[in-house]
Amino acid sequence: MKIKHVFDNNKKWIEKKLKSDKDYFKKLSKHQKPGILYIGCSDSRVTAEELMGAQPGEVFVHRNIANMVSSTDLSAMSVINYAVCHLKVKHIVVCGHYYCGGINAAMQPADMGILNPWLRNIRDVYRLHKDKLDKIENSELKNKRLAELNVQEQCINIIKTSEVQKAYKERSLRVHGWVFDIRSGRIIDLKINFERILKNIMEIYRII
Ligand code: CO
Image 1: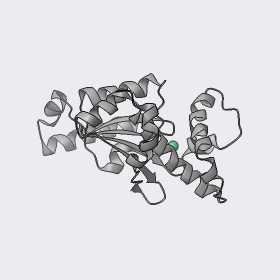
Image 2: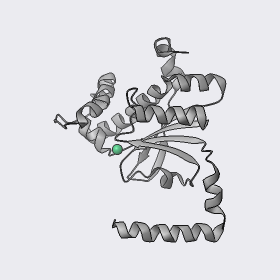
Image 3: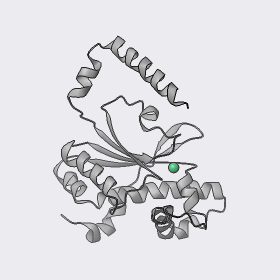
């Protein structure tokens, strides 16, 4: 995509929005009240708002390589804090995707420089679920399953934060794990059973 096209497209987009509502941008500038916090991969093929059909103002978005939620990542932690405590979102979504370069890289024995500590978070997910993953012989299926399990673990990381634990008790905040299948364009709800998963580990992670 050429930079010039960005500005041409932007101009057309403004015209389209103003055609349907002449006060569109005036209203948009007043406030935001998104119902969803979306945490996804930076992958250029997984365009958060477009694949959900979301309009400006509807989704608060955080993206990084392989949709990770690390407790030492000030950016991710700040996004969660702001979305939960100030915007009061009703849903937090972690959306991974199949054919993820981050997941692939974490499964290769290679020195990736500054990416090493980032990818190690994914390798830790692999270690946690090694028994199940090593039973899958097909490497494509193995990658896809690791992408799903990574989503599950990042959802659990979200539930480890005090903000989310408080919001769980005080209001109906819900966490969802999804994967986007690039081959079909479908969003798949992994329907993660958090009650079951958290039953045994919450005695360790409960902080409120
Ligand atoms: Co990815």
